[in-house]
Structure formats: structure tokens, C-alpha cells
Image (cartoon, rainbow, N blue to C red; front, top):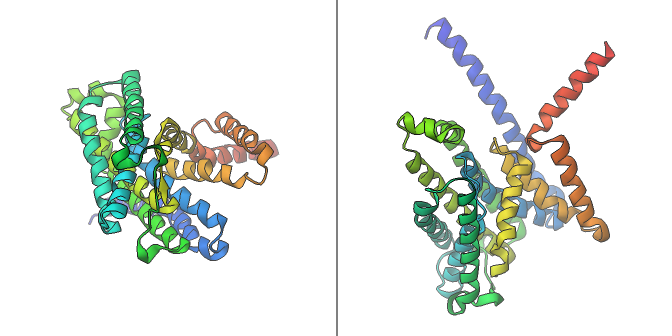
Length: 327
């Protein structure tokens, strides 16, 4: 290796280690959390945050390709109902049901994608919203299978992970795997192509990029990840109903990404911590819970328009300003 090559590789390796450091700190903190909190309400919140982080990372891929979906809850619901019916009615292994649930969501996504990915802008948004409501209505009306509005209860977690602490570690492990897969996808050449499509679809087409194929792959992966979220959430709360997969659930996944940051995979993780955990932590102030929550959202959007990921940049700018004033 030449001296020039070595000088090029060293900074790149250093930069890679610097990027891994925050991830290592977050994972280490998440691992020790149960030993600090015990099997308490905080552990419940942490598990819910990890479940939503998985689903939010899925829809994040759709955002990265330049689309804005309001129907992701439909794919979450497909995964949840598929895995729940398999485990409760057919005694299928939980792990196999998880895989089949994710595959069912991905399959539905591949069929829907053939239609919706040919649309752009507001038409894409309206179609995904309509599809989400269509699927929710199927969950309500198909009573012979879904039990209608009463939903399905008695959904069990895998035997090995039946305790709150062990199930938390299961969800955390799957969240880490999801982040690694999505992260590697976005930093690869495929991810560069995804970003190119988001910046200018027409320019990408003129350069020979198979835009529709790339969008289909991204959409299918995102739907499959949504199915994983649905299966985990069903096993966590032991109950599902059509109300769990309406428009508000899709909007929640969108807001998680917007609040966390749309341009980085840290966005859905940080957004899940904020959007899922904050309302739960404010429950002790019942009369002011949603007022405080709304105020926090307003302040966040005012001072961090790029999402929570920009908080580091805000701190750096404030430090620079303070140093200049001290001179």
C-alpha cells in the first residue's frame, strides 16, 4: 500500500469508528436499562419504543426514496393479524409466524407497489391513505377470520421470551438487526441510488437507473419491516383490533420520522424515543398531559426544524456564539 493510500484509509477508518461510537453508547445503555429499572413501567415504555423504532425505520426507507406514505399501518396490521391467527388458531411456532407475518406484509406490499409506485406527489399520499382505510375496514368486516371490532385476544409471546425483561431483549435485538440492515442498505451503492432518485427521479432515469425497480425493492422491504413491528406489538400487548391499525397509527410513524429527522436513520430511533416515551412519562400530569406534549412538539419544530438529530448542530452553534461573545 502506498503512503497516499494509507493516508486516505486512516481518516476513513477513524470516521467509521466515530460514527459507530454513538450507536455503541445507545445499545450499551439499552442493554443495561432493565438492570436499572427492573420489570417496571419504564421497561414497558422501553419495549414499546423499540417496537416503534423498528416500524419507523421501515417507513423511513420509503421517505428516503422520495415518497410520503400514509398507509403503513395497513402493513403493520397484516403482519399482526397473520402471525396472531397462526399462533392462536393453528398453533404455529411463534418464530415461523413472525416470518410468515413479515412475508405476508411484503407480499401485499409488492402487489400494492405495482400500482402506487407509478403515482407521484399527492396522488401517492392519497392512494396510501385510502388503502390503509380499506385494509382497516377489512379487519372490521371479515369477522369470520379477524373477529371484527372485538379483535383477537390471548396472543402469546414465544415461551423463551415470555417475561417482560426477556421480551424486551428480544425486541431490542431485532431493533438492532433492523438498524444494521437498513443502515448498510443506505450507505451502500444501492443507498446512493435511492438518494439519487429522491433528489431527481428524472435525472436518475436519464442516467439509466431502474427507478421503478429500486422503488419496488424499497417498498417491499419497508412493508416487511412493518409486518415485523405488527407481530412484535401483538405479542407484547397480547391483543389486536382494527382500531390499532387506522390512520392515526400511520400518522404516528410519519411524525416519528419527522420529529427525529428525515435525512438520517437516527431519525426514526430518536423520534420513537420522543413520540412514544414522552406521552407515557407525562401520565402523572393527567390534566396537562397533552398540553405539555403539544407544547414540546411546537418548541421542537420551532428550534429544531430538521428534527432531533440536529440537536448536536444546535449545541455546536450555541457554543460558537458563546465563544465569540466571550472574546
